[in-house]
Image (cartoon, one colour):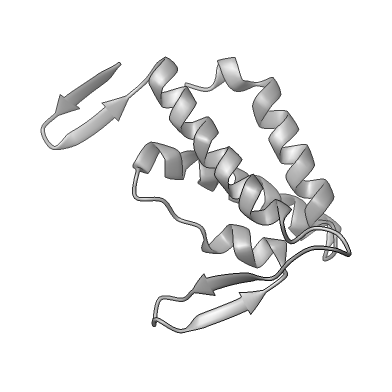
Length: 113
């Protein structure tokens, strides 16, 4: 369901959950290609227009931002969880962090919003 209140776009219910979940999935898909010994480099366009190639999943996840605010909220949720886990565990655990984060979000999908 979607309602507009004085230049505010408020979404809730099934539509909002689906968009948030789509943001989670897209961040996970972008980071997933960097994982493991056969992982690939990802090219990121920086704010100054320069390109940066990296295989660091944390850098890839932090650089993702969507135009849709609800989809971006799902991506932000992943980034917050991954950063919190990274602060405790340290470097080199992006695979575990992303998998854990996605499992937690998918298990609690119906409790979002």
